[in-house]
Amino acid sequence: MAPVRVAIAGSTGSIGTQTLEVIRAEGADRYVVAGLGAGSSADALIAQAREFRPAVVAVADGTARAVVAAALPGVEVVADQAELVDGAEVVINGVVGFAGLSVTVAALRAGTRLGLANKESLIAAGPVVQPLRSTPGAELVPVDSEHCAVHQCLRSSIDAREISRIVLTASGGPFRGRTADELAGVSVDDALAHPTWSMGPKITIDSSTLMNKGLEVIEAHELFGVDYDRIDVVVHPQSVVHSMAEFTDGSTIAQLSMPDMRLPIGYALGYPNRIGTAFGRIDWSTLSRLDFEPPDLTTFRCLGLAYQAGRAGGSAPAWLSAANEVAVDGFLAGLISWAGIADVCDAVLDEYEGSVPDTVDDVIAADATARRRASSVIEHRMAR
Ligand SMILES: NC(=O)c1ccc[n+]([C@@H]2O[C@H](COP(=O)([O-])OP(=O)(O)OC[C@H]3O[C@@H](n4cnc5c(N)ncnc54)[C@H](OP(=O)(O)O)[C@@H]3O)[C@@H](O)[C@H]2O)c1
Image (tube, rainbow, N blue to C red; front, side, top):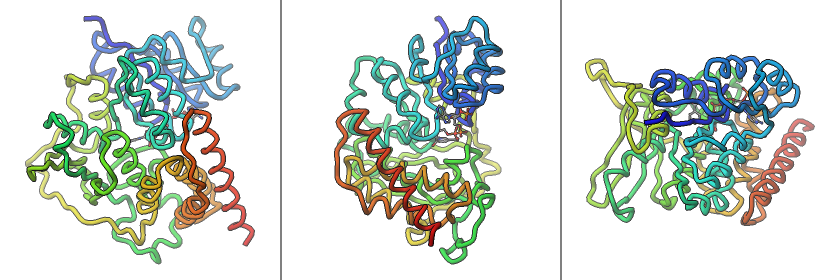
């Protein structure tokens, strides 16, 4: 069989580089890289392209694009990562934030399998992305470890009506067990010190506020069509049980492995088959305990805000996701405190006007409005 042609958007990030590790481990007879894309990391992208020899690379930043083009004669160099979709059989979307929307839309429109790590695009554009999932050949396989786990658990049932509940596990992040008062003065470095996962900065901050789990609740609703009253979150500090599905007969099926994103990435690459390389195998002789506890919704307000936005539907998730991106950038830049992230998201959601996006342009407009409002909330707080 010919090797599967894979395009990787966001190839220089945490998900992107781990995707290349899986491809390297599986070998060129199984997977070849058709395209690579990044924002502005020219040197890393050039090194990846020299090793994996894609026909096309995409670079969003104009200056970096010129550097990449000069270093890679004979390789097509484009601006938009959506162009990576042509010629690929599987697209891994590892772009961070709303910038990943064009890749999600292009991959599904082209009838390609999409390995989706970029949850923000599905959350912001759910009403627009959903119909694209029925494009002939299109398939959305989640790369987020929790949703990959649920995807695997649901394969044990042939009737969606048998799902009674989805339970998403959360590590609890670096601030698990701390009170709001104790977290008043935490630094960026404190928030970036994730106990179990090594990830890019945006999702690491989202994990510290539990916004990541909140976004994942919305993602689970969009992916599996389960209503919000039947999606629960449980804190599980070891990050070994990656999520669970409970069925009408009372059975709960869980997926377990050590925390290693190469497993869900490999699942998306190989689906519906399994890849041959094992990542995150469990050594049962050393795994002594698995703990579970309810999330603290008072200290970690972002989780509740995400349920609120998800239940409101329409553009509310787009507003929340955009406000959160601006707030996280503000926190990383030292403009607001850690607790300010929830304050900004709350203030922006309060102004939500109740629109429903029909087109990608509607989603882009909703995102822009929410970003403006979030920036203005931050400016007002700084002026106080
Ligand atoms: N990391 C994980 O373990 C993990 C787990 C589950 C889900 N996810 C999700 O996967 C996505 C990626 O996360 P990550 O941790 O891999 O992020 P990351 O390490 O920050 O990497 C982000 C990637 O996106 C590219 N990028 C950034 N801005 C861009 C833009 N405007 N246009 C085009 N490309 C742009 C970056 O390119 P440059 O290098 O040039 O900036 C980089 O390749 C997020 O949605 C996250 O929630 C990640």
